[in-house]
Image (tube, rainbow, N blue to C red; front, side, top):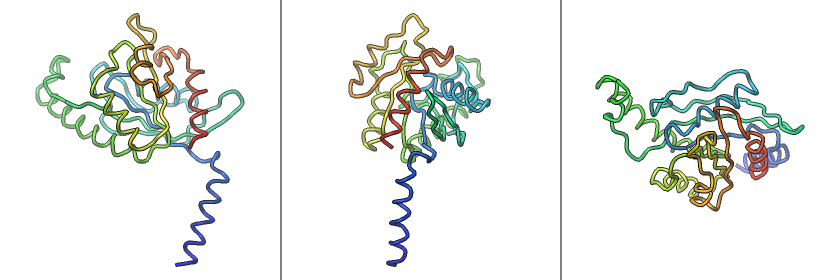
Length: 213
């Protein structure tokens, strides 16, 4: 037993010494259709040449956690390696009837609702494995809702470093100040994942948060 404790002690010391070289688990969370996968895709495409998942106008296109290992991001002469984790959209209620408006059959709508519900549960479970979480919100939508409060509440309980991304700033209805007012304790960065606007500020914030890991 003492030998095992001795080995574990030095393992922790070694890990801390080379902490800046480890792969940081970066999770993308948020409500459905906020742009989580779009942002993750843009980052992965820029630095690996490959996307992480598919996007769709239909809610809950991402229904399983998907990830890409060893994404090395370069910014202002610095490099950091991340494990990108794209999660299904968090929702407090998922009704199969909501999918029927997208011309899905009743059978497919029920199956999608079932998979989406399982995806929400999986997303929450993965929080325990995250080093940093990016909460992606639609800047054109009202941030004061139960879903967003649920997401932030789960993060507060786990004491995980958080960056809030106000996505879709290219839309006329986008209002970053509303999101800043809703969550004043967190840094908010406005971007457009679709057009790649303001990603420099996003990377700056991610690198800064990584120092807390």
